[in-house]
Image (cartoon, rainbow, N blue to C red; front, side):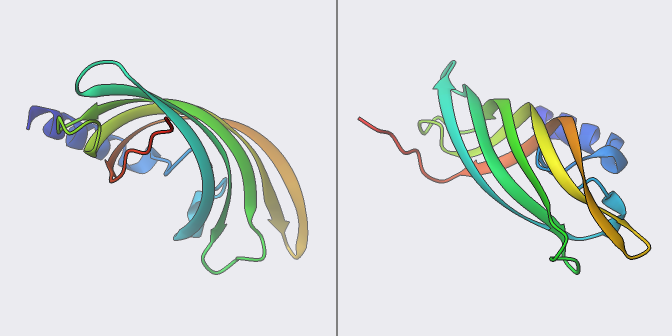
Length: 137
């Protein structure tokens, strides 16, 4: 319970500074955004409730009403996860992550459209639920 309260406090303090993911929209004033990502990851156990997860992938993000001007990106990152269940790294976990993204995003100005490139570093906190634990033996 103490961890959830700390997470909630940090989230409220950072509410206006949060990014949703490593693949990001450079223009945050657009409102609702839609993203599609393909991610590959590798998770290494550290203890009975903790793991470290490394990932990389590609993604597309766009404002709901501007699908013809998507931002494209590649990402890589690492995350330390704290699981709340001892069921072999399943169910809910709290993750602290950081990663880099190379983004190509649209530059719109009075009818002119072009593209700019951006390299971003995004740290974050997320609460996720992992349903399956796939393994290759």
